Length: 400
Image (tube, rainbow, N blue to C red; front, side, top):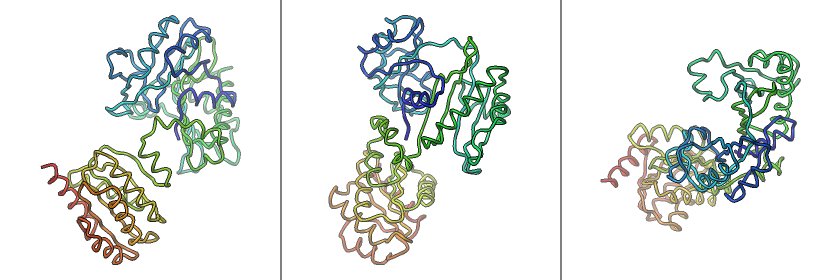
């Protein structure tokens, strides 16, 4: 689960992490009062969307201007002006795709005197089963670009869960960020605070870009991007309350209600598959034959008829779907359950696009018989290759 920057900073601040003062707003008329709560004389007006690259982003609407999604204001009046322009407008960044995201919240933050910009992030390293920190002196830049052009400027610090943060971790971070004296001590303290926050709230990823050194010689988290492990949210009802469903795809929200693993993509062929590996292979072979998947959908190994019905409805709700491929290799999953779910969904919502079904495994003959006897216009397939070719051909034929 992702949260907004202002929420991430509030979480970090509760663990003692140094952040700038700021006030979130959802209405333009709140901007002036928010700005007057902060010292000034500089304010930063930040779009709050679940995507990176906000500062370099562009708004679709002319009223929003071309100054990007993060703006420096030199007066309260300018804060008000930017808020009026940005709220309700659609921001397009490198991570949103061309559709962009509507800005429904802003964060009015106190300006900072910046001496240096650094980079610091934390993630779960699944190779070592440890929390690893990634540090670089190249803050304020796309970390992917740093990794590509100057990988030697990236430093990784792994923390053994049995020991937690030790003094040598702090020294390693200070060296990686080229910090000395009191700043080195501050870096060691910050590392401990971030590790505690990461573990205590079951974070999946924490990114601070930039981590700044102020001209007064202090470390401060100028930005914060945080995501949490969905499977651990039951332990953190306060964190779960931070979820902003307006930032999520409606189909993905609906899928989560049925414990379906669903991700919207931008292709034309809807996929319903059991097993993440098989789902990836299905998407790959669709691309191989000249079309693109409209979604990733793993119904899991123990799906019920109701779950399969819900999955099919979610796929058909996407107007971009021009064909559907059901690819089931039944081990734990039974092919007859899939067949019953598909038929129930088709009878409920109708079938407006070509449907190709490939079944194999437990109760496969019964599953095929159920579909065959249903009277539905379903295209059967013998194997994955055959299924992919048939659904791609059907979609291309429908396009004319």
